[in-house]
Image (tube, one colour):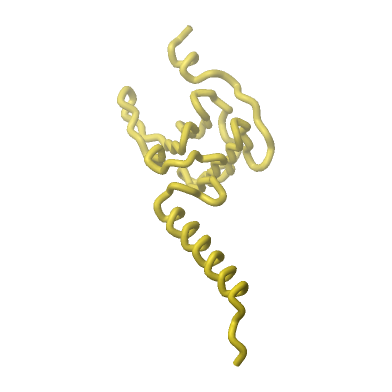
Length: 133
């Protein structure tokens, strides 16, 4: 067997160290390679990009409405909050209307909202609509 040259072995060590740093930081949530988050709210697949760098800002699951007592779905990641209430989609307080199908997919990409791959525009600001103004 022929021994590795010093140049090849030092490159291999640097590559292994870089791989270790990426793997460790992925587990800590400090660096996420793709910077996106996927979940399912009810039957709706949701993908948020960019999601933000800290996982402590992340929440997802059913929430009980204090006024009506109904349960709705909410997922937040970074500064993006996706809410599905009575099959109506809201992102960051803006309503994007009702879903056509129970399994419509949602993608939030840098402030743009897509349902089943097609970009949709906000219908109304839900905070404004709920205040009754």
